[in-house]
Image (tube, rainbow, N blue to C red; front, side, top):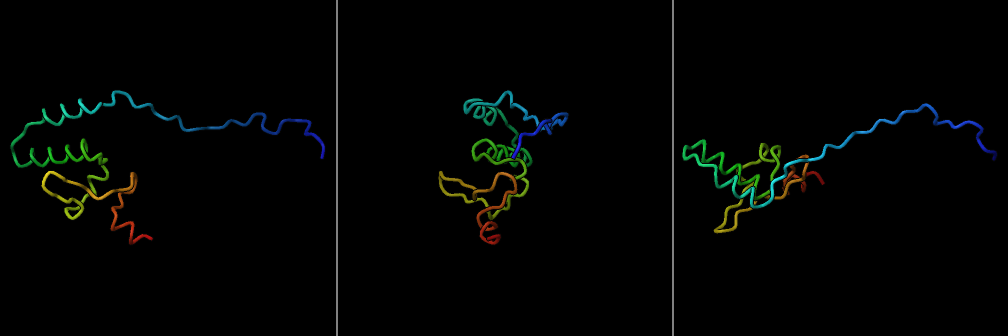
Length: 100
């Protein structure tokens, strides 16, 4: 085989997705302050604080929170937990078992 005389990639422009850099990411103490400063004793306010707690302390994303079912939350004395979810599709453990 011989060498190519002309570069076949000349004039081809490659597009890429520029990743956004996240700014102002809160550290753990900032997240604690945010959670503790939210005070609203109305029924809606208490619901919102629970959702904020799931985001801050369980690491749920808003899409996961939106798809969350009551059966996905397990409350035990001093040990609340949420079934693991995939980061994008929020398929909880029982849904992943069905999918395989």
